[in-house]
Image (cartoon, rainbow, N blue to C red; front, side, top):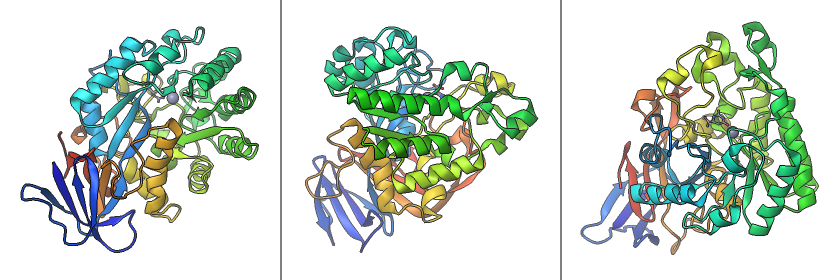
Length: 430
Ligand code: DOR
Ligand code: ZN
């Protein structure tokens, strides 16, 4: 398949160019390119070309909760959101704690063919926090697991976490921590602060996250192992990561689009769509997270795309399952919170949504420069278009978006995976 992208701005910079994609690679960059007679020509005048996005934190619910999402519907959402690789979290049913499950996830993703679905392996058997999984077997499987996480729950036992870091370092894989000291979040459904107090909701203190971030930074230092902090949500976490990086500790961190844009003032109407773990914090936390992403203290954006069925969200707030859709809205929220206000350039968007995540997890074929000879994992964005989010119109099987009826900037107009168009003008398809 040959594709010609006409008139794109590489990283949103310089003069418009044509990009010829052939045989899965960027074959030529220049002007007046047409390709052969059966080339697909995409008129993208004034649009921005970026390396395909990489999401380190996606819940695709397969196996086990296909009524909420599966690898096919989640892959379509990913392609439409501009993603060419996603990491599917291990809190499925059965848990992805064996090579049978992790290889299934990889195979199914390749069969669907819309995005590379990289399986995340569980750190502990059944996510129970007691016994380490056979990380080596999962890493050596066809699905080549590169990242391990008990996300959804925290690896809270410090000795188990220490051992996990030691083994991971030997295997050259990454441990990603959902930082939540469970003794501090018993019954918690919202950020602990004035809003939760007023609404009568049980609070989740910042210290529940920050105490684990601090602890794991020290464990990583002593193990000489890398640790990745999932969904950083507080100003204090930012300060701890800044400190750890200054010490030379090999720590990285992600922030979600919803923690950049939203805060706990949204909880006033008890709408279950706003329930998420970690919870929406205060406006000052969101400001600190934006600044940290701009400064590079936080390395990347990850969606924590967490589909839940209607009956699991549209109920009493304390009973609503935590989690929000994120794949199709991530870029727009990053543009709204970061590019619009001048905190990031489009060049930086390539870094935080593609290059940094690919580097953190060691993906050789993603987050590559837009140059001839590189794999054609690409995203085309119309920076001037705006759209209104409608949950039911998203490709996910669930529609639990917190952005319902919100108008957002920037539209992904095309996504290419190894030179194949996986999404175009709002339609996903291989
Ligand atoms: O809000 C969340 N939802 N946070 C998590 O850590 C897990 C996720 C899920 O699996 O639904
Ligand atoms: Zn989590």
